[in-house]
Amino acid sequence: MKTKKELVIIVDDDMTNLTWARNALFGAFDVFTVPSGEKLFALLKKITPSLILLDIDMPVMNGFEVMRILKRNKNTAHIPVIFLTSTIDYETEVKGLNLGAVDYIAKPSSRELLIKRVDLHIVFEKQKRELLKHNLSLESEVDKKSKTVHELQNTILQTVAELVECRDNITGGHIERTQYYLRLLIDFLLEHDVYTKELNSWDIDLFIMSSQLHDVGKISIKDSILMKPGKLTDEEFEEMKKHSLYGVNIIKRIEENTTENEFLRYAEILACSHHEKWNGRGYPYGLEGEKIPLHGRLMALVDVYDALTNDRPYKKAFSHEHTVEIIKNESGEHFDPAVIAVFLLHEDEFKNISNDSRFLESQRMKERLSMEMIKSTMA
Image (tube, rainbow, N blue to C red; front, side):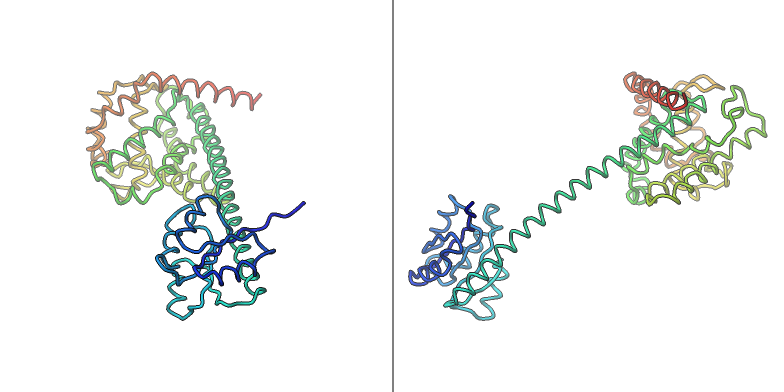
């Protein structure tokens, strides 16, 4: 099978030089010759060469002007250009290279040298294109795998979080609703320029995803306490409070076997701080005010809002209005006043989510599927 030769275009206004260059390359390449830049651009509308040999000193349009036009056009910018010229000095060479030329060849030149230099640059350009194509393919493959890993990771987290919900007798998609509430709250804080600098330093998507683990420590709480329908005794409540530190310990154990530190760092902070109170009377450490990480202050609000507006074993759901009144009265006590001020400006948006029948139905469906999955693994 006959191998297809690479195509080279030679541009020179001197017919003697054109003939010499064509004869020198003949047999090694397919060669087209044109006497001017204008003729070159007319030819480029029909064919795309592997390389262009370009004279500098030409009337009407010199080689530098031709080069500028070639590089401005996305269809010709990639074509390697070698200046084939008798005018070589330092300034001319630098100017040509700055415009994008890949090489200079003085004329007259030996046939062997001309063929070797042209072949070298054609091979180099092909390798460069192959490398770029390979890199783009790798990037695409990495993106696909990263997306798959991310989706798998999120699915596992959802299953673990929903398992905690099932043990805790919490129904109706508490985890997913609090994620929606967190994103809403962050958007509104940014809109009102509240804690903007700190929020902009976060990876918001990772933070939202990590919130699924805020109560993971409840896995370590006894069923007799976690699922008790009535009020807990003082001793039982002290045991229940330990779920924050249990959660931290669980996440730290995961950290020992993974490199995903940023995601787990968010999860650890949330597990440890979402029951702290602004007035310092929360747990596990009794932190006060802004000593409580902002992550935990935001989670505290959305966690309480969702708990109050939904049924629990020990209470019926409160109305949105009653819940807002309770939260308002706890500003500066349980909650960060700056966060509550923004929440109160947008409390209707929170009500819309909690009352959205489509959202609630999707949560019920997810809950049923999750329960079926858990039952099937335990069968």
